[in-house]
Image 1 (cartoon, rainbow, N blue to C red):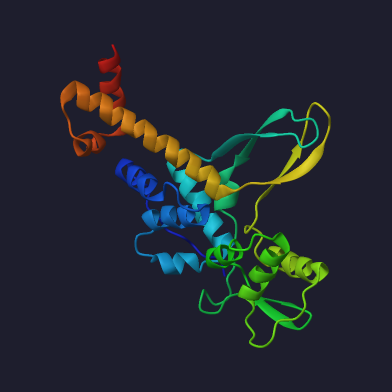
Image 2: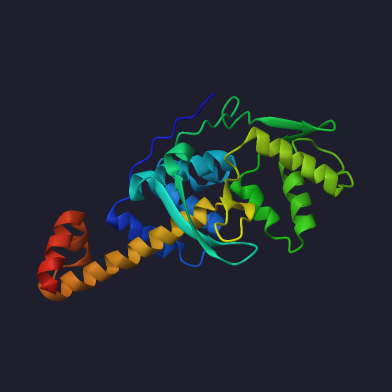
Length: 245
Protein backbone atom coordinates (compact mmCIF):
# COMPACT_ATOMS: atom_id res chain seq x y z
CA UNK A 1 0.00 0.00 0.00
CA UNK A 2 1.15 3.60 -0.55
CA UNK A 3 2.68 5.38 2.43
CA UNK A 4 1.70 8.92 3.26
CA UNK A 5 4.46 10.94 4.93
CA UNK A 6 3.38 13.98 6.93
CA UNK A 7 6.20 16.36 7.75
CA UNK A 8 6.61 19.89 8.95
CA UNK A 9 8.31 22.66 6.98
CA UNK A 10 11.72 23.76 8.20
CA UNK A 11 11.92 27.12 9.95
CA UNK A 12 14.80 29.58 9.63
CA UNK A 13 16.20 28.26 12.90
CA UNK A 14 15.90 24.70 11.59
CA UNK A 15 17.93 25.57 8.49
CA UNK A 16 20.76 26.98 10.59
CA UNK A 17 20.68 24.10 13.07
CA UNK A 18 20.61 21.37 10.40
CA UNK A 19 23.37 23.02 8.38
CA UNK A 20 25.63 23.53 11.41
CA UNK A 21 25.18 19.92 12.56
CA UNK A 22 25.60 18.48 9.08
CA UNK A 23 28.70 20.32 7.84
CA UNK A 24 31.35 17.73 7.05
CA UNK A 25 29.07 14.72 7.43
CA UNK A 26 28.67 12.05 4.76
CA UNK A 27 25.75 12.81 2.40
CA UNK A 28 23.90 9.75 3.73
CA UNK A 29 24.01 11.24 7.22
CA UNK A 30 23.07 14.69 5.91
CA UNK A 31 19.96 13.24 4.28
CA UNK A 32 18.88 11.54 7.50
CA UNK A 33 19.62 14.69 9.48
CA UNK A 34 17.35 16.75 7.23
CA UNK A 35 14.55 14.19 7.46
CA UNK A 36 14.91 14.06 11.23
CA UNK A 37 14.36 17.81 11.45
CA UNK A 38 11.17 17.56 9.38
CA UNK A 39 9.98 14.38 11.12
CA UNK A 40 10.94 14.88 14.77
CA UNK A 41 8.77 11.96 15.90
CA UNK A 42 10.98 9.56 13.89
CA UNK A 43 14.26 8.35 15.41
CA UNK A 44 17.50 8.46 13.44
CA UNK A 45 17.63 4.65 13.59
CA UNK A 46 14.17 4.23 12.07
CA UNK A 47 14.91 6.71 9.27
CA UNK A 48 18.15 4.84 8.49
CA UNK A 49 16.04 1.71 7.92
CA UNK A 50 13.67 3.32 5.41
CA UNK A 51 13.96 1.90 1.88
CA UNK A 52 15.75 4.40 -0.34
CA UNK A 53 12.66 5.12 -2.42
CA UNK A 54 10.70 6.11 0.68
CA UNK A 55 13.59 8.33 1.80
CA UNK A 56 13.86 10.02 -1.61
CA UNK A 57 10.12 10.58 -1.81
CA UNK A 58 10.15 12.28 1.60
CA UNK A 59 13.14 14.44 0.66
CA UNK A 60 11.42 15.47 -2.59
CA UNK A 61 8.29 16.42 -0.65
CA UNK A 62 10.33 18.43 1.83
CA UNK A 63 12.22 20.17 -0.96
CA UNK A 64 8.95 21.17 -2.65
CA UNK A 65 7.68 22.56 0.67
CA UNK A 66 10.82 24.56 1.47
CA UNK A 67 12.08 25.67 -1.95
CA UNK A 68 9.25 25.11 -4.43
CA UNK A 69 8.55 22.29 -6.90
CA UNK A 70 11.05 23.17 -9.63
CA UNK A 71 14.41 21.37 -9.39
CA UNK A 72 16.77 23.45 -11.53
CA UNK A 73 20.42 22.68 -12.13
CA UNK A 74 23.10 22.20 -14.73
CA UNK A 75 25.34 19.42 -15.97
CA UNK A 76 28.10 19.06 -18.56
CA UNK A 77 27.67 16.94 -21.66
CA UNK A 78 29.61 13.70 -21.35
CA UNK A 79 30.78 14.00 -24.97
CA UNK A 80 31.55 17.66 -25.73
CA UNK A 81 31.55 19.24 -22.27
CA UNK A 82 28.81 21.77 -23.09
CA UNK A 83 27.10 23.16 -19.98
CA UNK A 84 23.41 22.19 -20.04
CA UNK A 85 20.58 23.31 -17.81
CA UNK A 86 17.87 20.91 -16.64
CA UNK A 87 14.60 21.26 -14.77
CA UNK A 88 12.58 18.58 -12.97
CA UNK A 89 9.13 18.94 -11.45
CA UNK A 90 9.68 17.73 -7.90
CA UNK A 91 5.96 17.12 -7.44
CA UNK A 92 6.20 14.06 -9.68
CA UNK A 93 8.73 12.61 -7.23
CA UNK A 94 6.89 13.70 -4.09
CA UNK A 95 3.65 12.15 -5.36
CA UNK A 96 5.29 8.91 -6.48
CA UNK A 97 3.90 5.71 -5.05
CA UNK A 98 6.14 3.99 -2.52
CA UNK A 99 4.90 0.49 -1.82
CA UNK A 100 6.25 -1.36 1.20
CA UNK A 101 4.33 -4.55 1.84
CA UNK A 102 3.27 -4.73 5.47
CA UNK A 103 5.27 -1.63 6.42
CA UNK A 104 8.85 -1.70 7.66
CA UNK A 105 8.34 -4.76 9.85
CA UNK A 106 7.68 -6.87 6.72
CA UNK A 107 9.71 -5.24 3.94
CA UNK A 108 9.24 -6.02 0.26
CA UNK A 109 11.30 -9.00 -0.85
CA UNK A 110 12.87 -9.66 -4.25
CA UNK A 111 14.04 -13.13 -5.22
CA UNK A 112 16.89 -13.91 -7.59
CA UNK A 113 18.00 -17.51 -8.31
CA UNK A 114 16.32 -18.80 -5.19
CA UNK A 115 17.83 -16.20 -2.85
CA UNK A 116 15.74 -13.46 -1.20
CA UNK A 117 16.68 -9.83 -0.60
CA UNK A 118 14.95 -6.84 0.98
CA UNK A 119 15.22 -3.34 -0.47
CA UNK A 120 18.40 -1.34 0.31
CA UNK A 121 18.36 1.36 3.00
CA UNK A 122 20.66 4.23 3.94
CA UNK A 123 22.25 1.90 6.51
CA UNK A 124 23.08 -0.62 3.77
CA UNK A 125 24.60 2.08 1.56
CA UNK A 126 26.74 3.24 4.47
CA UNK A 127 28.14 -0.27 4.88
CA UNK A 128 28.84 -0.57 1.15
CA UNK A 129 30.57 2.84 1.13
CA UNK A 130 33.28 1.41 3.38
CA UNK A 131 34.57 -0.59 0.40
CA UNK A 132 37.01 1.15 -1.94
CA UNK A 133 36.47 -1.33 -4.78
CA UNK A 134 33.16 -0.94 -6.65
CA UNK A 135 32.73 -4.70 -7.18
CA UNK A 136 33.31 -5.42 -3.49
CA UNK A 137 30.94 -2.57 -2.60
CA UNK A 138 28.20 -4.14 -4.74
CA UNK A 139 28.73 -7.51 -3.06
CA UNK A 140 28.59 -5.95 0.39
CA UNK A 141 25.37 -4.13 -0.47
CA UNK A 142 23.68 -7.26 -1.80
CA UNK A 143 24.80 -9.38 1.16
CA UNK A 144 23.66 -6.68 3.57
CA UNK A 145 20.17 -6.96 2.06
CA UNK A 146 20.05 -10.75 2.15
CA UNK A 147 17.30 -12.10 4.39
CA UNK A 148 18.77 -15.59 4.52
CA UNK A 149 21.44 -17.05 6.74
CA UNK A 150 24.19 -19.26 5.44
CA UNK A 151 27.35 -19.02 3.42
CA UNK A 152 27.44 -16.36 0.72
CA UNK A 153 27.80 -17.55 -2.87
CA UNK A 154 30.54 -16.56 -5.27
CA UNK A 155 28.97 -13.51 -6.88
CA UNK A 156 29.42 -12.80 -10.58
CA UNK A 157 28.88 -9.40 -12.18
CA UNK A 158 25.83 -10.83 -13.94
CA UNK A 159 24.32 -12.00 -10.64
CA UNK A 160 24.87 -8.62 -8.99
CA UNK A 161 23.40 -6.81 -11.98
CA UNK A 162 20.28 -9.00 -11.90
CA UNK A 163 19.76 -8.37 -8.18
CA UNK A 164 20.22 -4.64 -8.79
CA UNK A 165 17.69 -4.63 -11.63
CA UNK A 166 15.10 -6.47 -9.55
CA UNK A 167 15.59 -4.05 -6.66
CA UNK A 168 15.26 -1.07 -9.03
CA UNK A 169 11.96 -2.41 -10.37
CA UNK A 170 10.67 -2.98 -6.84
CA UNK A 171 11.77 0.47 -5.62
CA UNK A 172 11.81 2.83 -8.64
CA UNK A 173 12.51 5.97 -6.59
CA UNK A 174 15.66 4.48 -5.04
CA UNK A 175 17.65 5.92 -7.95
CA UNK A 176 16.42 8.92 -9.92
CA UNK A 177 17.74 9.32 -13.47
CA UNK A 178 17.43 12.23 -15.88
CA UNK A 179 17.15 11.63 -19.62
CA UNK A 180 19.38 14.27 -21.19
CA UNK A 181 20.21 15.41 -24.70
CA UNK A 182 22.94 17.87 -25.66
CA UNK A 183 21.75 20.59 -28.02
CA UNK A 184 25.29 21.06 -29.36
CA UNK A 185 26.33 17.51 -30.28
CA UNK A 186 23.05 15.55 -29.99
CA UNK A 187 24.57 13.27 -27.36
CA UNK A 188 21.91 11.43 -25.33
CA UNK A 189 22.56 9.88 -21.93
CA UNK A 190 21.10 9.26 -18.49
CA UNK A 191 22.44 11.00 -15.39
CA UNK A 192 21.61 10.26 -11.77
CA UNK A 193 19.94 13.00 -9.73
CA UNK A 194 21.34 12.82 -6.20
CA UNK A 195 18.45 14.36 -4.31
CA UNK A 196 20.37 14.46 -1.01
CA UNK A 197 23.26 16.47 -2.46
CA UNK A 198 20.86 18.66 -4.43
CA UNK A 199 18.81 19.52 -1.33
CA UNK A 200 21.85 19.93 0.93
CA UNK A 201 23.40 22.47 -1.44
CA UNK A 202 20.22 24.55 -1.19
CA UNK A 203 20.09 24.21 2.59
CA UNK A 204 23.67 25.38 2.87
CA UNK A 205 22.96 28.40 0.65
CA UNK A 206 19.84 29.27 2.68
CA UNK A 207 21.75 28.97 5.97
CA UNK A 208 24.56 31.26 4.80
CA UNK A 209 22.02 33.79 3.55
CA UNK A 210 20.30 33.73 6.94
CA UNK A 211 23.60 34.32 8.72
CA UNK A 212 24.20 37.34 6.49
CA UNK A 213 20.74 38.69 7.33
CA UNK A 214 21.33 38.17 11.07
CA UNK A 215 24.66 39.97 10.83
CA UNK A 216 23.22 42.90 8.89
CA UNK A 217 20.22 43.41 11.18
CA UNK A 218 22.20 42.84 14.37
CA UNK A 219 24.68 45.48 13.24
CA UNK A 220 21.90 47.93 12.42
CA UNK A 221 19.45 47.32 15.26
CA UNK A 222 21.30 45.31 17.87
CA UNK A 223 18.89 42.39 17.59
CA UNK A 224 19.93 38.92 18.70
CA UNK A 225 19.94 35.97 16.31
CA UNK A 226 16.77 34.62 17.90
CA UNK A 227 14.99 37.96 17.57
CA UNK A 228 16.02 38.30 13.93
CA UNK A 229 14.95 34.77 12.98
CA UNK A 230 11.61 35.19 14.73
CA UNK A 231 10.67 37.75 12.07
CA UNK A 232 8.91 36.49 8.96
CA UNK A 233 10.96 36.29 5.79
CA UNK A 234 8.99 39.20 4.31
CA UNK A 235 9.56 41.48 7.31
CA UNK A 236 13.27 40.67 7.38
CA UNK A 237 13.48 41.58 3.71
CA UNK A 238 11.85 44.95 4.34
CA UNK A 239 14.21 45.74 7.23
CA UNK A 240 17.22 44.67 5.12
CA UNK A 241 16.09 46.95 2.29
CA UNK A 242 15.91 49.89 4.71
CA UNK A 243 19.36 49.06 6.09
CA UNK A 244 20.90 48.95 2.62
CA UNK A 245 19.20 52.22 1.64
